Image (cartoon, rainbow, N blue to C red; front, side):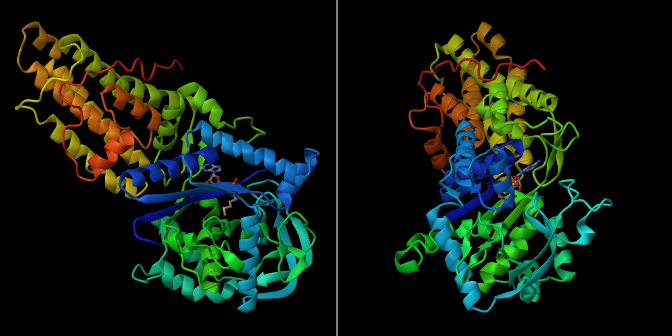
Length: 517
Ligand code: MSP
C-alpha cells in the first residue's frame, strides 16, 4: 500500500433484509473514521457493499416470488439509500454479483487450487442457513438448534472442495501474537484477540469451500458444477473492489498495489473468526499481503432484547434520522456506549443523550455565543485580548482525541468533546457577559472572542460525526471555506484565528430542538 493511503472496510451486508440500526452502527463508525483520517490529511478509500449469494438469499427471494438477482437488486439499492440518508461518504460500493467480483473470486480460487491448498472430499455435517455456516454439535443448544437462529441446522452430506486451513495454524498463531512480525495483524479489542488465539490453539480443521447443489453462487473455476461457499465468496470482496484481477489479461489493476492491504477491517464480534482466521489464511495461501488491523465492536440489544423482526423491535436508519436528524443520529449511535463492548440502546436513552449533549450543551453553546455577538457587537467578531486562556484549555482537552480516534473509542471522543463544550459553557456562566455588557466592561469583547474561537475548534473536531451541522455552524461563523478545508488546515498545524475578527456572524437558527420523550 502507498504511504498516506488508508483502506477501511465494513462487512458487506446480506441482502435478505433491509438495513437496520445494527448495520448502520458499523457503517456510521467507519464513515466517521474515514472522515476523521481525511481531515488528518490521509487519502482514505472506504468500502462497503452487499453480500448477495448463498442459500439464505435464495430462500428470501423465493419467499418473495422473485428471482435471486431481481431480489438482490432491490435490497442492495435499499442499502445504498440508507447510506445516503445517513450521509455515508463511501468511496466504493461492491456487490458480490458484480462482474469484477466474480473475476476476482475465480482468480483467487484458481490460485489456491494451483498451489495445492484445495482438495476434494466428502462433507458430512450440519449447516445453519441463518449463519451460512457449518456447525459442530458443540455449537448447538440443548434442543440441537443454532443458538442464534433457533433452528435445527440441516444435515448435509456431499462431495465438496476443501481448503487446507489446518496448514495455517502455526503461521497464524505466530503472526497474530507477535507484534514484531512484519505480517502482524492487530486484532482489537485485545480481549478478542486472546479469544481467537485460544480457539486457534484448540486446532484448525480444513473447511469446505464449495456447495454442490446451490446454483445461486459463483461457479468454481476448476469444477463448474459446484459454487463457491458464500463466506469465501464474500471475503474476497475486499480485494475485488480495489482491483485484484481488475487489470488486463487477468492481472491486477494498479490500484491493487496502491491500496492493498487494508488498514482496517471493521465489523461486529459475530464475524471476527472469518476475518481474523479464514481470510488471512486464504491470503497467505495466495501469497498476498495481510490486512493490518481487524476491529470487532460489540453487539447491542434494544431495551434489553436481541433485535428481531419477531419481537418487532427492529430500528431502521430512517426512523433514527426522522426523530433526531441525520447528524444527531450519527453522533448518538456511536457515542451511546463504548464501541468495543456490548451495549443496550433504547429510544429513551437516545433521546436523553440528544437532549443533554446536543440540545442543552453543544447547541446551546453555539446559539448563545452567536446571539450575544449579534446583540452586543452587531454580529461582528470582536478582537481577542489577553487575560483568557480558555482556548488553550479547550485545546488541551481535545488534544486526547487523536489517540481516542486511533483506538476507535468514539464514546471517549464524544466524552472529550462534551467536556470541552461544558468548560466553555461554565466559563460563560462565570463571566456573565450580560453583566459585562451592562457596564460596558472592556473584557466583554475578548471574552466573546474566546467563546467563539473555542466553539470553532470544537466544531472542527465534531465535523466527522456531524458533517452537515458542522458545515452550517462553520458558515454561520463566517467561514468562507468549507469546514473540511478549515479542519485539514487546523490539524496540519495551522493554529491561526479560526473565526476572523470583524467577520459578521449569521444566526444558524435552532440547531437541536429539544425532544420530548
Ligand atoms: N454478509 C456477512 C458479512 C460478510 S463480510 C465479508 C454478514 N452480513 S450481516 O448482514 O449479517 O451483517 C453482520 C454485521 O452487521 C455485523 O458484523 C455488524 O457489523 C452488523 N450488525 C448487525 N447487527 C448488529 C447488532 N445488533 N449490533 C452491532 N452490530 C450489528 O455477516
